[in-house]
Length: 98
Image (cartoon, rainbow, N blue to C red; front, side):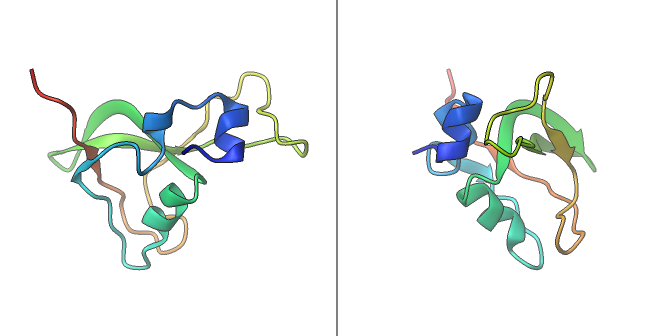
């Protein structure tokens, strides 16, 4: 289920871990990226790019105002490296085939 903050942001369920499967689960040396995704602090977009020759979904944070609402014009902050250990984030959702 989406977190309370994700619901306030109008996030769809498949942007939250547990509502999709990983083709390649993101990893970092401190484990912070997966914890942040599981806790609804970091989100996984449906757009896919390429990082170092590998497919990767976009990872992002959604800043909130003090009352928990999203600021107007807020599209999220793209995150390419783990904010805690600095490792590059590469992860890819599994999409249905056919």
